[in-house]
Image 1 (cartoon, rainbow, N blue to C red):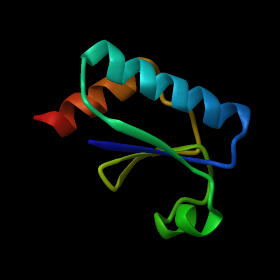
Image 2 (image 1 turned 90 degrees about the horizontal axis):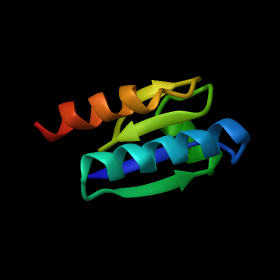
Image 3 (image 1 turned 90 degrees about the vertical axis):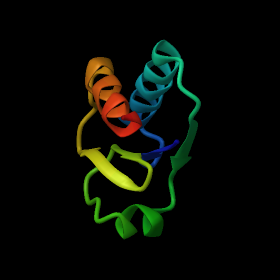
Length: 80
């Protein structure tokens, strides 16, 4: 599983990264979590407001910080 955090490195982006890492750890999943700060790559996803959460190439949230529980739910859905 590949999780991408789209954003320019602001506080919200860092918090989303932390939440994603915590969700992966709590669920015991194997996942690669990467930060994407290249504006061209971010806009390739159609994201205009960061931070954004992308799981396996699909934007799951944009313009806000999903809660830990929201991220866990999205990860479980993808893993089924």
